[in-house]
Length: 223
Image (cartoon, rainbow, N blue to C red; front, side):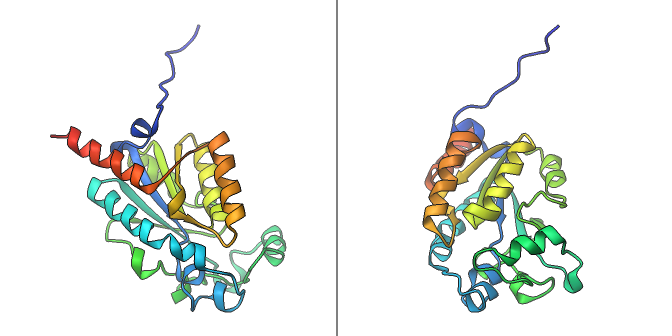
């Protein structure tokens, strides 16, 4: 005996309709983005590509707020005294490109969201200790409580924490949207490769202006 047919949303207007979509902003924090942060000053990571996406992200965030789209800010956090460390994590971080062991130390300026994208009261702030915004956090509960079916995932780095969060969102049975001009990396080739894989396997890849168009059209439909 078969059950009812499974509803499938197809195409960006249906997938990213503002009534069931959340904007999840990943790791736009001072230690990763600001020239005075640890990534730039200690690890010498190039910030050009990551910083170039800030204007598009500001536009996207403003549009999400205006459209009533759920917003969640995910910030990488290292707990003091090794409380968030593990052997596998330290081993991987020890050979990671442009790595700093105590990046985004809890409670410091480096852990804070950059001023350009600062959270507003009522917006979820999720602290994570691994690449994915879902690993050991309450992000899934926040999204499901808000009736979210689609996650628009953006931030840094495209090929690391954004990818890990987007893939896990898909594994949690969310539709996933990646606005390519609101994602940044230290390596443009890895950025492009990540987006290519996402297109083929688990996400809708688009431009910020396309999402703005969807949300504006949703607003027109309300009248």
